[in-house]
Length: 144
Image 1 (cartoon, helix red, strand yellow):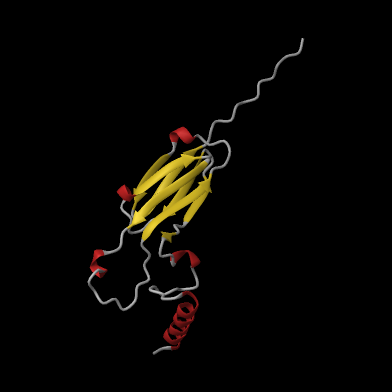
Image 2: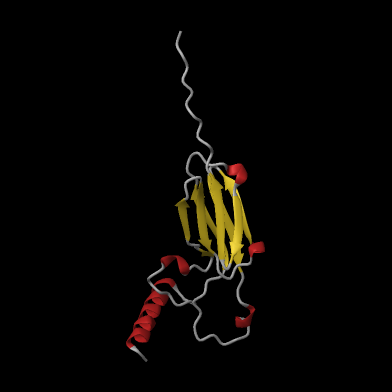
């Protein structure tokens, strides 16, 4: 057994003694990925000038299991990642992948056009485009 495996076993034992049975191996580099109830999806949001672009990682989730809604000036991404059926009757050496429902809420900046938001799904990434509202130009009024 390597030093890393011994360390992982010690951490798993500590977690088990503190919180009860742990089914999954935890890697401390990403605290979002060890939830039995929810999955935390990682996103980037970039200002592209005339629109905002959000790219959300949702690997292993088919697009028909994802919904996007706007509520209270927030963009909400919801979905479900189903457990791989291959693991149902197998003796699993370790299980690190997360399964279940997820929800990610992103507060929208001011001045966006929520009526024309676009979304596409490509190779495990959800790509959302949010157009900005056109800024009204100032009109000078002549004083008589």
